[in-house]
Image (tube, rainbow, N blue to C red):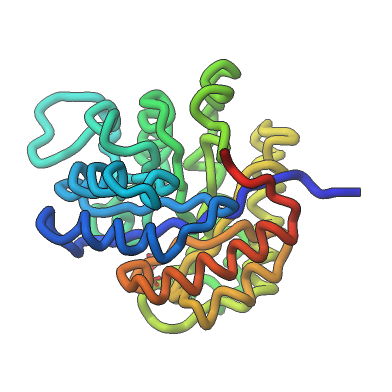
Length: 279
Ligand code: PGA
Protein backbone atom coordinates (compact mmCIF):
# COMPACT_ATOMS: atom_id res chain seq x y z
CA UNK A 1 0.00 0.00 0.00
CA UNK A 2 1.26 3.47 -0.76
CA UNK A 3 2.03 5.74 2.17
CA UNK A 4 0.39 9.12 2.55
CA UNK A 5 1.44 11.57 -0.14
CA UNK A 6 3.50 14.35 1.30
CA UNK A 7 5.51 16.89 -0.66
CA UNK A 8 9.30 16.92 -0.50
CA UNK A 9 10.33 20.36 0.72
CA UNK A 10 13.68 22.16 0.82
CA UNK A 11 13.48 25.45 2.68
CA UNK A 12 16.46 27.79 3.00
CA UNK A 13 16.73 29.97 6.09
CA UNK A 14 19.13 32.78 5.30
CA UNK A 15 18.97 34.12 8.88
CA UNK A 16 20.56 37.61 9.30
CA UNK A 17 22.44 37.45 6.02
CA UNK A 18 22.14 39.20 2.62
CA UNK A 19 21.00 42.75 1.84
CA UNK A 20 18.29 44.12 -0.46
CA UNK A 21 21.09 44.84 -2.93
CA UNK A 22 22.30 41.26 -3.25
CA UNK A 23 19.45 38.99 -2.11
CA UNK A 24 17.51 39.05 -5.38
CA UNK A 25 20.46 37.90 -7.45
CA UNK A 26 21.27 35.13 -4.98
CA UNK A 27 17.66 33.94 -5.04
CA UNK A 28 17.55 33.91 -8.85
CA UNK A 29 20.84 32.02 -9.01
CA UNK A 30 19.57 29.42 -6.56
CA UNK A 31 16.32 29.13 -8.49
CA UNK A 32 18.17 28.45 -11.74
CA UNK A 33 20.47 25.90 -10.09
CA UNK A 34 17.61 24.03 -8.39
CA UNK A 35 15.03 23.92 -11.17
CA UNK A 36 13.21 20.79 -9.96
CA UNK A 37 9.42 21.07 -10.09
CA UNK A 38 8.99 17.91 -7.98
CA UNK A 39 10.49 19.66 -4.96
CA UNK A 40 8.76 22.46 -3.06
CA UNK A 41 11.49 25.08 -2.73
CA UNK A 42 11.22 27.96 -0.29
CA UNK A 43 13.70 30.76 0.39
CA UNK A 44 13.43 32.70 3.66
CA UNK A 45 15.51 35.90 3.50
CA UNK A 46 15.50 38.66 6.13
CA UNK A 47 12.33 40.80 6.17
CA UNK A 48 14.01 43.71 4.38
CA UNK A 49 14.99 41.41 1.49
CA UNK A 50 11.57 39.83 0.94
CA UNK A 51 10.50 42.28 -1.77
CA UNK A 52 13.82 42.00 -3.62
CA UNK A 53 13.65 38.20 -3.55
CA UNK A 54 10.01 38.15 -4.61
CA UNK A 55 10.69 40.48 -7.54
CA UNK A 56 13.85 38.69 -8.68
CA UNK A 57 12.07 35.33 -8.65
CA UNK A 58 9.07 36.73 -10.53
CA UNK A 59 11.36 38.19 -13.20
CA UNK A 60 13.17 34.91 -13.89
CA UNK A 61 11.44 31.99 -15.64
CA UNK A 62 13.25 29.58 -13.30
CA UNK A 63 12.22 31.62 -10.29
CA UNK A 64 8.48 31.14 -10.58
CA UNK A 65 8.61 27.75 -8.92
CA UNK A 66 10.38 29.07 -5.83
CA UNK A 67 8.31 30.32 -2.92
CA UNK A 68 9.25 33.06 -0.47
CA UNK A 69 9.08 32.79 3.30
CA UNK A 70 9.63 35.01 6.32
CA UNK A 71 11.76 33.92 9.26
CA UNK A 72 9.33 35.03 11.94
CA UNK A 73 6.01 36.75 12.57
CA UNK A 74 4.83 38.73 15.59
CA UNK A 75 2.18 37.24 17.85
CA UNK A 76 -0.08 40.28 17.56
CA UNK A 77 -1.74 41.73 14.46
CA UNK A 78 -0.73 45.37 14.93
CA UNK A 79 0.02 47.82 17.70
CA UNK A 80 2.78 49.45 19.69
CA UNK A 81 5.49 46.86 19.07
CA UNK A 82 8.52 48.78 17.91
CA UNK A 83 10.60 47.01 15.34
CA UNK A 84 8.24 44.06 14.88
CA UNK A 85 6.51 42.64 11.79
CA UNK A 86 3.06 41.04 11.92
CA UNK A 87 1.73 38.24 9.75
CA UNK A 88 -0.78 40.40 7.81
CA UNK A 89 2.08 42.71 6.77
CA UNK A 90 3.62 39.80 4.87
CA UNK A 91 0.71 39.30 2.52
CA UNK A 92 2.00 39.86 -1.01
CA UNK A 93 5.61 39.47 0.13
CA UNK A 94 5.76 35.91 1.43
CA UNK A 95 3.65 32.76 1.35
CA UNK A 96 5.55 30.89 4.07
CA UNK A 97 6.75 31.74 7.57
CA UNK A 98 9.18 30.00 9.89
CA UNK A 99 7.87 30.11 13.45
CA UNK A 100 9.56 29.11 16.70
CA UNK A 101 13.12 28.80 15.44
CA UNK A 102 15.49 27.84 18.26
CA UNK A 103 17.54 31.01 17.73
CA UNK A 104 14.42 33.04 18.50
CA UNK A 105 13.56 30.84 21.47
CA UNK A 106 17.12 31.49 22.70
CA UNK A 107 17.60 35.17 21.76
CA UNK A 108 14.06 36.56 21.92
CA UNK A 109 12.83 34.35 24.76
CA UNK A 110 10.02 32.87 22.69
CA UNK A 111 7.95 30.35 24.61
CA UNK A 112 5.63 27.64 23.32
CA UNK A 113 2.64 29.77 24.40
CA UNK A 114 3.88 32.72 22.36
CA UNK A 115 4.75 30.50 19.41
CA UNK A 116 1.23 28.99 19.55
CA UNK A 117 -0.10 32.53 19.04
CA UNK A 118 2.32 33.14 16.17
CA UNK A 119 1.21 29.92 14.45
CA UNK A 120 -2.41 31.18 14.61
CA UNK A 121 -1.46 34.58 13.22
CA UNK A 122 0.50 33.07 10.35
CA UNK A 123 -2.33 30.65 9.59
CA UNK A 124 -4.90 33.44 9.64
CA UNK A 125 -2.76 35.40 7.17
CA UNK A 126 -2.87 32.33 4.88
CA UNK A 127 0.82 31.60 5.20
CA UNK A 128 2.37 28.15 5.16
CA UNK A 129 3.86 27.64 8.62
CA UNK A 130 7.16 25.87 9.29
CA UNK A 131 7.07 25.22 13.03
CA UNK A 132 10.51 24.48 14.47
CA UNK A 133 11.02 22.14 17.41
CA UNK A 134 14.08 20.43 18.84
CA UNK A 135 15.89 19.46 22.01
CA UNK A 136 19.09 20.79 23.59
CA UNK A 137 22.14 18.52 23.81
CA UNK A 138 21.77 18.02 27.56
CA UNK A 139 18.16 16.98 27.05
CA UNK A 140 19.16 14.36 24.48
CA UNK A 141 21.95 13.07 26.69
CA UNK A 142 19.48 12.76 29.56
CA UNK A 143 17.16 10.68 27.37
CA UNK A 144 14.58 13.47 27.30
CA UNK A 145 14.66 14.40 23.61
CA UNK A 146 11.34 12.83 22.68
CA UNK A 147 9.55 14.20 25.74
CA UNK A 148 10.88 17.70 25.08
CA UNK A 149 9.83 17.69 21.44
CA UNK A 150 6.43 16.20 22.28
CA UNK A 151 5.85 19.00 24.79
CA UNK A 152 6.91 21.63 22.26
CA UNK A 153 4.55 20.30 19.59
CA UNK A 154 1.73 20.15 22.14
CA UNK A 155 2.40 23.65 23.45
CA UNK A 156 2.84 25.27 20.06
CA UNK A 157 -0.24 23.65 18.48
CA UNK A 158 -2.66 23.12 21.33
CA UNK A 159 -6.08 24.29 20.21
CA UNK A 160 -4.81 25.39 16.80
CA UNK A 161 -7.29 24.51 14.07
CA UNK A 162 -6.27 24.09 10.44
CA UNK A 163 -7.53 26.68 7.95
CA UNK A 164 -10.95 26.02 6.46
CA UNK A 165 -11.23 23.57 3.56
CA UNK A 166 -11.80 26.29 0.97
CA UNK A 167 -8.53 27.95 1.86
CA UNK A 168 -6.70 24.68 1.77
CA UNK A 169 -7.87 24.05 -1.77
CA UNK A 170 -6.87 27.40 -3.14
CA UNK A 171 -3.62 28.22 -1.40
CA UNK A 172 -2.27 25.01 -0.01
CA UNK A 173 -2.26 22.89 -3.13
CA UNK A 174 1.48 22.16 -3.17
CA UNK A 175 1.97 21.75 0.57
CA UNK A 176 -0.39 21.71 3.53
CA UNK A 177 -0.53 24.80 5.73
CA UNK A 178 1.60 23.22 8.46
CA UNK A 179 5.08 21.70 8.21
CA UNK A 180 7.16 20.76 11.23
CA UNK A 181 10.94 21.10 11.22
CA UNK A 182 12.75 18.90 13.70
CA UNK A 183 15.94 20.79 14.47
CA UNK A 184 18.01 19.48 17.36
CA UNK A 185 19.54 22.63 18.83
CA UNK A 186 22.98 21.01 19.13
CA UNK A 187 23.02 20.35 15.37
CA UNK A 188 22.26 23.91 14.23
CA UNK A 189 25.28 25.68 12.79
CA UNK A 190 27.66 23.22 14.46
CA UNK A 191 28.52 20.92 11.57
CA UNK A 192 27.15 18.09 13.66
CA UNK A 193 24.00 16.33 12.44
CA UNK A 194 21.55 13.98 14.08
CA UNK A 195 21.51 10.42 12.83
CA UNK A 196 18.89 9.69 10.20
CA UNK A 197 17.36 6.99 12.38
CA UNK A 198 17.01 9.38 15.35
CA UNK A 199 15.40 12.01 13.15
CA UNK A 200 13.00 9.39 11.78
CA UNK A 201 12.10 8.29 15.30
CA UNK A 202 11.40 11.90 16.17
CA UNK A 203 9.21 12.31 13.09
CA UNK A 204 7.17 9.40 14.44
CA UNK A 205 6.89 11.07 17.83
CA UNK A 206 5.82 14.33 16.19
CA UNK A 207 3.10 12.65 14.12
CA UNK A 208 1.81 10.67 17.11
CA UNK A 209 1.63 13.92 19.06
CA UNK A 210 -0.32 15.54 16.23
CA UNK A 211 -2.70 12.59 16.45
CA UNK A 212 -3.09 13.12 20.21
CA UNK A 213 -3.86 16.79 19.52
CA UNK A 214 -6.77 15.81 17.31
CA UNK A 215 -5.09 16.26 13.95
CA UNK A 216 -6.18 12.67 13.20
CA UNK A 217 -5.02 11.60 9.75
CA UNK A 218 -3.62 15.07 9.09
CA UNK A 219 -0.73 13.98 11.29
CA UNK A 220 0.24 11.51 8.58
CA UNK A 221 0.00 14.12 5.85
CA UNK A 222 1.97 16.79 7.75
CA UNK A 223 5.48 17.11 6.30
CA UNK A 224 8.30 16.73 8.81
CA UNK A 225 11.66 18.21 7.82
CA UNK A 226 15.05 17.72 9.41
CA UNK A 227 17.22 20.76 10.10
CA UNK A 228 20.68 21.20 11.56
CA UNK A 229 23.91 21.38 9.52
CA UNK A 230 22.28 19.96 6.40
CA UNK A 231 24.56 20.03 3.36
CA UNK A 232 24.64 18.24 0.02
CA UNK A 233 26.90 15.71 1.77
CA UNK A 234 24.60 15.03 4.74
CA UNK A 235 21.11 15.27 3.21
CA UNK A 236 20.99 11.66 1.94
CA UNK A 237 20.84 10.11 5.39
CA UNK A 238 17.66 12.04 6.14
CA UNK A 239 15.93 11.63 2.80
CA UNK A 240 16.57 7.89 3.05
CA UNK A 241 14.04 7.88 5.90
CA UNK A 242 10.49 7.63 4.52
CA UNK A 243 9.14 9.68 7.45
CA UNK A 244 11.40 12.68 6.66
CA UNK A 245 10.09 14.94 3.91
CA UNK A 246 13.00 17.27 3.28
CA UNK A 247 15.14 19.80 5.07
CA UNK A 248 15.29 23.25 6.60
CA UNK A 249 18.74 24.42 5.55
CA UNK A 250 20.62 27.29 7.19
CA UNK A 251 24.24 28.00 6.28
CA UNK A 252 24.28 25.86 3.14
CA UNK A 253 21.21 27.63 1.76
CA UNK A 254 23.36 30.69 0.97
CA UNK A 255 25.53 28.62 -1.35
CA UNK A 256 24.03 27.90 -4.79
CA UNK A 257 26.27 24.85 -5.27
CA UNK A 258 25.08 23.36 -2.00
CA UNK A 259 21.43 24.10 -2.74
CA UNK A 260 21.83 22.53 -6.19
CA UNK A 261 23.14 19.33 -4.61
CA UNK A 262 20.51 19.24 -1.87
CA UNK A 263 17.58 19.88 -4.22
CA UNK A 264 18.88 17.39 -6.80
CA UNK A 265 18.84 14.68 -4.12
CA UNK A 266 15.44 15.82 -2.90
CA UNK A 267 14.11 15.54 -6.47
CA UNK A 268 15.28 11.92 -6.68
CA UNK A 269 13.46 11.25 -3.42
CA UNK A 270 10.32 13.00 -4.61
CA UNK A 271 10.23 10.98 -7.81
CA UNK A 272 11.00 7.78 -5.92
CA UNK A 273 8.04 8.50 -3.65
CA UNK A 274 5.80 9.09 -6.64
CA UNK A 275 5.49 12.87 -6.61
CA UNK A 276 3.44 14.34 -9.41
CA UNK A 277 5.30 17.18 -11.12
CA UNK A 278 3.76 20.50 -10.12
CA UNK A 279 2.05 22.39 -12.93
P1 PGA B 1 22.19 25.23 9.81
O1 PGA B 1 20.85 25.94 10.32
O2 PGA B 1 21.82 24.46 8.57
O3 PGA B 1 23.13 26.36 9.53
O4 PGA B 1 22.66 24.33 10.89
C1 PGA B 1 19.63 25.28 10.26
C2 PGA B 1 18.53 26.14 10.82
O5 PGA B 1 18.80 26.88 11.78
O6 PGA B 1 17.39 26.13 10.33
